[in-house]
Length: 468
Image (tube, rainbow, N blue to C red):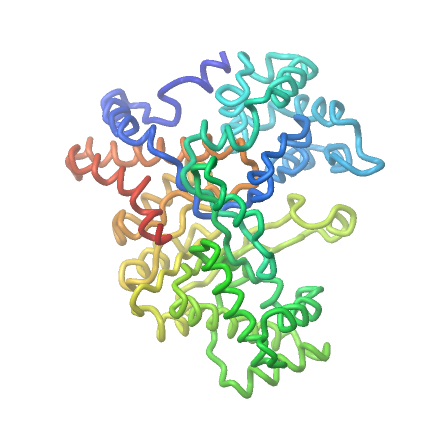
């Protein structure tokens, strides 16, 4: 039964037969288009070296906080799900814990993506719940050692055209350079400038990061002047190596333009370890303004990912570190927070600003009106907790009546899980087809126009927004 769910050609399409028929036609129009992934977290070195994937648990369970957090919520200690390390369980034991918990994922986005992978990528031939844990482990493990089951071949099999990574400003981007110069590889793997640890003075290694940054790229200047120069220089280095965007993972989207003397004052306080919490917030907001200024000058698309309370459970963070499933969304204000940036750059030529949120209440209240006026502003696709079928439909319903389709970023998979990329993009295309089919069925959009819109949404929008 479950195998037919994963393979059913009508999955995620409308239940109404007439609307579903329209959606089928729209989906067929885009189903085989190449994947454009302008924001993600796959390691470029994996593509460069064509690194074999690890065992099933290390690939699909331990690094995926979507998976481990729900199993943990239902009573399994995280140390039963962690691969690697001297005290970690054996991989097969982690997999058994996961398979035992598989029923918990019914109805979740993670369950949908995983089921799709098991069917279309690993060819299990049955639902995970209908197999023994050892049988599914052995079947996936056998697939992982096949010579053709390597990142480069899958990149081609998945029909990926562009894959962006997320990179430290001081990364030498050697893997990206090697891939770009490799005539045997036809895709594009692009770096993304991610300066959070150099802008947020509350970051535990901020001072050391800034020292290295200034020493590496400050052109001999010290202090705040050298810091700004170094950031500008490293952004240019990324542009020279193919980058099209700079990404910012911040608590809030606050922006603020300080005069130079005040910025220097806070910068020096921070380097001396004397900055207050207010200083930290003020300086980060100022640096987000500076990132906008730099994007206007160097052309990098500016993307903002705010609204997550990182490491909500301190004991888990102390035991297992960051990105272990306890980052929790909170309410986000965009209208006032982003205004200083938009006052100066919102209508600047060729400035592209992509705004994401974990707070659905701002879809129609703030983001759609902003994107519906400012030429620079684009709507980031539903992200993280909102990257799920029903949430994606709510996003479309909330923003389209104000901003239309043209102000959207296109789908963003934002994933470290390489094998989930086609499943995520497939889900997005099915949701776009379903939403447009309803508009056609309600005689709000013609069917011919809907076919044009879905191609633009899936393919042209990410190329346009991310300057591809």
